[in-house]
Amino acid sequence: MSETPSRSEDPTTDVAKSTSSGWGLLVLVGAALAFASVFVEWATEDLFDESRTARRVPMQFLWDTTPASFDEFPVMWSVLVAVALLVASVMVPKLAWLGVPGGALAVLMPLWYVNGVRSAVDYYDLRDGVGDLVGSGVWLCVAGGLLALAASIARSVRSRSR
Image (cartoon, rainbow, N blue to C red; front, side, top):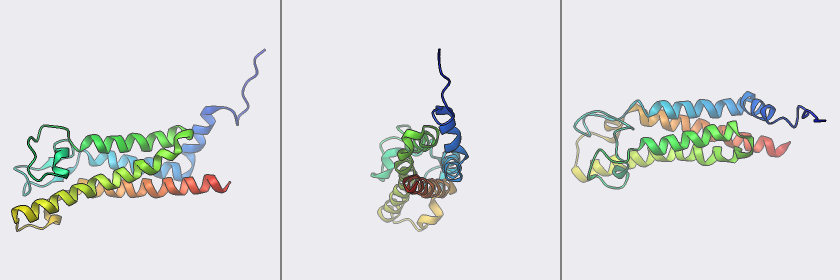
């Protein structure tokens, strides 16, 4: 005779509770914004030879203003790792703690990119300011990361106070 698990023991109930809570939904909205930023302009044509999304900005640019190749490991992958951490933190209740590092990564990667742009402006003595050279995708990722990070922290605090 098999017993059916009670509602509180059913793992699908935990996922449903996690995603239906306001904080879980905000984490997912933040993850969606970060994901969408991959397809929006990160670098203007004034910085590179053409406008570039996160799929075409090399990771090496974060620490080197003269990357060897623009076809290597793009920034997109670090953003997608952050998105995966955020989604996992909501969908798998035991991994809720992943929301904080996921949100932090979604905030820090674009800010590190902005610092790389600032370094390029200083190194090449560009007349345009950093704000003119950074595309809206960067700020979309920061906004999504901040939303997800704040919601993840709030979820963590709320779950501990129960």
